[in-house]
Image 1 (cartoon, rainbow, N blue to C red):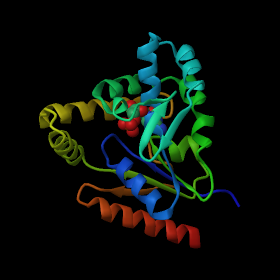
Image 2 (spheres, rainbow, N blue to C red; image 1 turned 180 degrees about the vertical axis):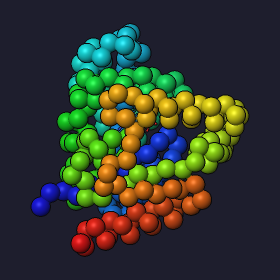
Image 3 (cartoon, rainbow, N blue to C red; image 1 turned 135 degrees about the vertical axis):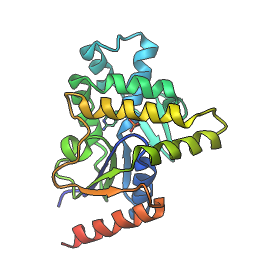
Image 4 (spheres, helix red, strand yellow; image 1 turned 135 degrees about the horizontal axis):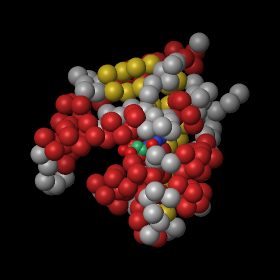
Length: 220
Ligand code: DC
């Protein structure tokens, strides 16, 4: 029997990271935050002066990436990158490197290596469409752009960072556009994905819904 995978895809700030980590914890599964890999490639590119339009050079860099995910921390070559990858700069860099097919190809094996017993919950943009097309359960998690901007706003203000709703709305719209219009692995639901709009749901309700779907899928 193959190791089960729950693929959770969706746009920026749909809450998929929080949801995926909670689902993984509830089931005792491993968790892959695939966006973190693109963020690490972006940061490493900036550090090494690799041009963001050189897909082949970026792919070589991606192919040597050996990140460690432990206890909610992410380290790369012994350096703790957990906070660095969450900056706006890392977001910007990651969405630039993610458009290159060779970079996406170079990260495929690394992403698939996280599929280990007893199971994996993976979140990103193309988990159900490209990386784990045979996933046991595929979820496409959405939320209105207003709900997402509102969540991000509260998150930033809570951490003491300056933020305005108008700027966040515009930024999310631009990122949605870039993620869904790119030629390679654009953000779109897999045909067999369950869709869930979390705009009016609490995190716990989203997690419970996914666990219920998984129980049904695993039983059937
Ligand atoms: O989920 P995130 O915000 O951490 O993702 C960062 C960037 O990486 C975002 O621009 C989309 C891209 N990405 C991707 O192209 N494919 C994935 N599986 C995950 C993220």
